[in-house]
Length: 468
Image 1 (cartoon, rainbow, N blue to C red):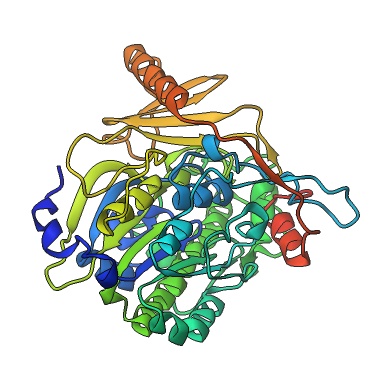
Image 2: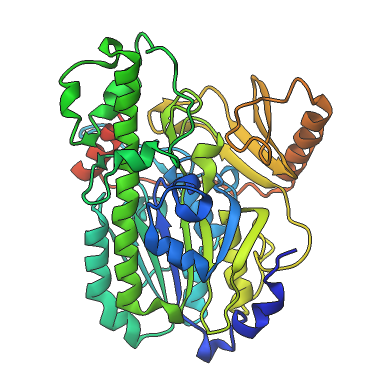
């Protein structure tokens, strides 16, 4: 199935435990695949583009959800969000003085990747800069050292790596999980990467913005408070006061700032590679989810399951001069990280894993995603599920179905559900079968400490608490 399989055991199969390589998992928050050069986007990330040339690139990788908390837990456990239950912020979004509410955390029956590697003799290190992903939900399990930096930028992450460098290198093999918050909003127009012409030119965004300014597009007014600096020409006007051209220019400014954040974090990942000499390690690079800029009528993420919020970059760099490289067009999921590492490190397989070894030959399972309950402030009326099978992707809700040919229509502009009812039925039945076969773990609850001011500010800022 994959062109590089014949090279795999020459470079990618790990020897016995004493010679196992270190493992590094780099997650960038809120990073759309189509804004990277090796996915056909502009040159926002020259280092990652170089890394892609000497890595295995999975062109059609999907996240299991469209916001951080469920997606990040699924990356480290290889189980679906609807299985592990860490799918909402109830108990985390409390204001001071509120009555404590138990928080859903990772069930004890679900092993995490750091626990697995710790048992295999690895020293484990975790640095997370998104305040949602911490000890409150059990994300620190299995880490010898774990720190949550509470929305600090990539320089702060790299500074912590530098502080731990000697300890990590002295304890090889080590496992390092690094979760950068950039390019999550707030979007900083970072020099020298802020370039409106690049972001709106030949490699710009799909032209899906409205031809008229919505009467009350309050989400744009809110998002403009999450961009620094705000365009001077905009002044204090609201979106409803803008001409069509100005409305589009305001969104272009936000998207250019988003692209500049990608350039900023790319430079820091380059520095991380040099600091730890990661060409000697197994390295996964991926995102937890993407971001929507009005392609389907919303901004930010965690409100739907369209491709711009769940299609993510995924590449695997293996050590050795003859390490395999290439590209795979198979539909894969970030749940595949854990079983792939089990195989590479010759660790026992787990029947609990819902992902697959990315390097194994044979048929691929359909890819699932889930969004339900309460994605922060966004109290969803229904659970949303999606399945990718062949070229088709079905999004299912209690209100009906949407069907897209993601090979011919990767931007999901044309709903084919009315034209292809037989395909809808086939994917619906397969979705129901897979969900029924997946174990639902008993919900694990923990009463958290009162939220920090940094957490409250994060929740308020991105619409996860209070009013947008």
